[in-house]
Length: 289
Image 1 (cartoon, helix red, strand yellow):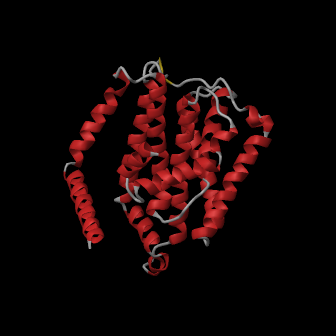
Image 2 (cartoon, rainbow, N blue to C red):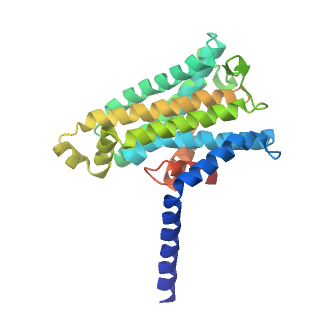
Image 3 (cartoon, helix red, strand yellow):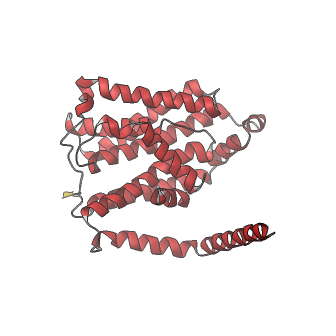
């Protein structure tokens, strides 16, 4: 009886807390936004602490990308580190070897990851659950092998060095002036707004119908194959953008070990811990992990 009463009290507390947060969510959002905007000016915000905060925001963005696939559509991926690596290497190579500026290279990184996501989505249309997870895991390992073995392009295990910092209106964005912090924060906010727009749209409702019952969604006339591929493409695009940002905040150096299977597990853990299908959960999950 005592255990049952404790459980009831815990549920009552959690319900009350969730109701309180939901009631005052806009106040929390405004307060958090003001805190983040002022964050680089705090005295305790050393370069090391700044990097930690930036990585929290970046992983929240990566979690939002995977959340489109797993939280909205119900497709579990263990290979998002592959899209992450493709985005990082695409952006870095275009900037270092072809002399592109950061902004077009970032868009190209997202588009390249989206293209690979489209190609990966085609053979996985009839797969789900464990089988889809195994295929995406294999994809992650293939990307890892390519990054290590294609030395003529990727420099193999030596990685890519001297990646230039981005510029905005002639101002260099780096850790010292907080430019990289605001860059990652802005992209994360835009990603969150885009995910909210997707969720409330016809496409988002189709994603959720596939997640809840794919057969029922098919019987209702939803072209599940098209929407599953679209989910892969959108998720890969967001993750590729995250990779493009990572290449300029990682001390101007990237190498293959940053995009291993453990990175995929970290991104998936952010989604699961934060709560499938939520946006604010990605922020809390990333900060906690």
